[in-house]
Image 1 (cartoon, rainbow, N blue to C red):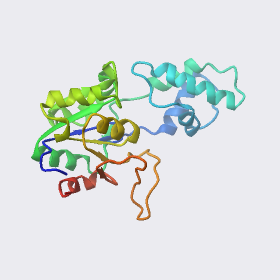
Image 2 (image 1 turned 60 degrees about the vertical axis):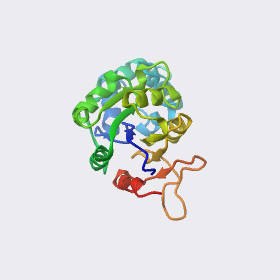
Image 3 (image 1 turned 180 degrees about the vertical axis):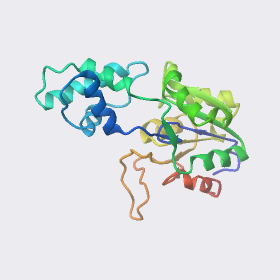
Amino acid sequence: MSAGVSAVVFDLDDTLCRRDQDPGALYAEAFERAGVEPFGAPSDLWAALTGPPEPNAEHAYFAAGYTVVAARHGRFDVDADALATALLSGIDHGAVSFTPGAQAALATAADRGHVGVLTNGPEWRQEPKLRTLDLFDAVDVVVYAGDMERRKPHADPFDRVCSLLETDADETLYVGDSLEHDVAGAQGAGLPVAWVPGPWTDHPVDDEGRPDPRPFSPEHVLASLTEFHTVYQAG
């Protein structure tokens, strides 16, 4: 990484933190709460969901997913809205923990300059995670793109975090797990990027077993944040 980089900005979900709740248990408990005979599996619901939910539209997002899964199982009389409500009521947004290497990466970045967090989620959903991880004491700024008119991969959130950090885009390294939202978005806004696949990221590997970002071209590819220190060793 260039010696001119003076700040590091991290994505939150699946980059700095991972959810601790068991998806299988959440799925089963939703049926119990809604009083609906179970069908399908958690993987069926995740597969039926299209992209991340829009801010403050999680209910409609999950209701649509349940509708698709129910139809695939011939359950056309299911109350998808009740299931979505039951699922969301069981989610504890503060039930998160650091991904491997995240705490060391934050400390390494802080030793060398400013540190920020840029997340696509809204504040009401992300603030409990930040508090659980004590991140308000570890970073200089937080940008909730979910509360902005445009989210990642649009340039606006990246411009906002650079403005708050008072750094130029080419001096601000962005670290994230999504090729489409983090890598493409940051590079489009002029930021160099370190890509680190999240714990749920389905990605190919190269001949050496390393994560393969192609056709994207992040400046750095990390198997996990335990390798974060290597970005300072790059030319």
